[in-house]
Amino acid sequence: MADLRTALQDALGPIYRVEREVRPVGACRMFVALQAGSGPALLVKVLPGELSLALDTALLERELLMLADRLSTPPLVPPRGSGRAGAFVYHSRAFVEGTTLRAWLARNGELPLRRAVEILRDILTALAHAHAAHIAHGDLKPENVLLTEGHTLVADTGIVGAVERSLPRGTPGVVAGALCAATYVAPERRAPGSKNGAAAAAPADDMFAVGVLVHEMLTGRPPAPESEPLEEVRSVPQWLAELERRCLAPDPGERWRDGGAALAAMS
Image (cartoon, rainbow, N blue to C red):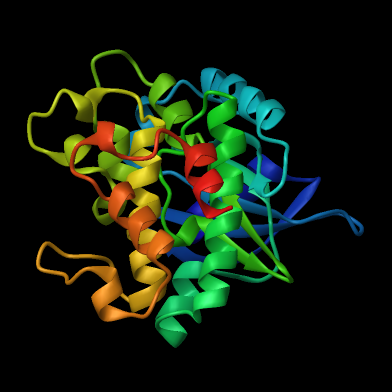
């Protein structure tokens, strides 16, 4: 709706000009904003209305500044900041030229093995940096994997946790339900009535999402309960089939403990 774009322009101006709206991700609307002159562009993600109304925007800004300081190492894309545009809260990051893994898979289906391994290595490198800083991604999915010239970048690391910590106490599970895609959420977090679903995201949750991404990159679709083992669908190295299987283990204690451990298994 035009009112949101106008409110966003009022919040970002005069330094940035809202240029266009891009394809939304789930319930979040997204806009590209250009800096006056030749400065870098921003990708601005507007959170859903019900979530926005409950957020403490000053606390969210402090949380994102902390993330920006601790997630400044490539291939991570750190957040830039946040604010309120009318009734909606937004957060921003640098706009990255290229495409998302989601868009690539939708256009082309499964990836060549070599390319899938390259992307996997970059994803695990990003997670290794984040996990070493004691930050779980919390919302790893193809929309947050950015494919650019010769590189793979990971965006929105820690955003779910930052938003959760900026809400009033006693609202467990609200953020994951509003922002996360259930396919990539670990089973112990999406089970009805699960205590883990109300807990902060952990590296084990990210590792489950990695397993889903591996399967999706190599078969063109996420794994399902009736899915055949990866090595029966596609010719892959044994280490890759084992990495995927361990990431998708129903018991979080059987998964790779973090991105660094899974990355070491690729060496």
